[in-house]
Image 1 (spheres, rainbow, N blue to C red):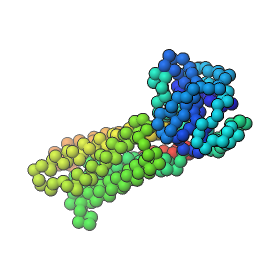
Image 2: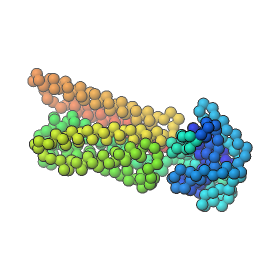
Image 3: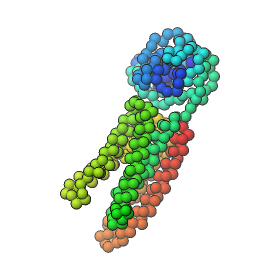
Image 4: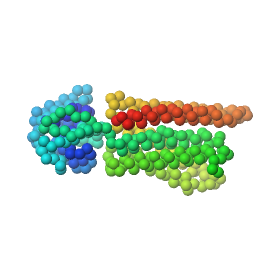
Length: 341
């Protein structure tokens, strides 16, 4: 007997010979095209949409929905259809996933729970779920580091510190430029490694908005340094085009990267209250507050300069240090949370 407790609008129970998705025997519990609860038998090849099979020898079907939570139980005497199956007595990994439906057809799931060990489904017992693969955690961690610390600091230095540090040299270059360039190289490297890691593991585009956003971020991130290499000189009459396009592209990358992080955390966070998503929301609020303070400081400084005021960068450096410490706290909290998933 395979019993699938309802976890959302659409549930799938998979009996498998390995932990990776694909070539799975599936039972689907969810809403049909008529809006009624139904159980379907299906089989998946690779990561494509499962093929619906005849329900076969399924009996003792009980379905219910309470507070939008679907629950199904049934008894199946159908043979297991995975390539490595050798009957009911063979041990299988179990996977529970849930997601939405559209006209009775399942969409890509939003959560997945895989048993940490194989189970004998002819003699069911308690199984525990395993954590996400290390490669998934490494992908998320690198993206957080890139767009919560190095990328953010690099952008702030270019926007707010540039005007105050001109003339201060390091290795023959303005010190602000060296800091900006170093941080953005780290950002591009971390983003690229994270992108390669996850696509080497997943090898497809399935997963909703997150992989689409990630691919756009990766493309725009590579465009940024490429355009910088071929930019015209500082005194060229067309330099303003590069300056504006460089700044606007950076802003677009930042917005899309934050959106990608949110969609990734929603998928990854298995906690009941989605606290990882809430921490990320706190980070966005914190970063917005610091940008407001930096803009206010720049406006005040410009106003003060018209009356012969000081041009000291101490306040900006203080805000930059505060920004870094705050971001670091949010980053550590999220990295610990990802590690515990």
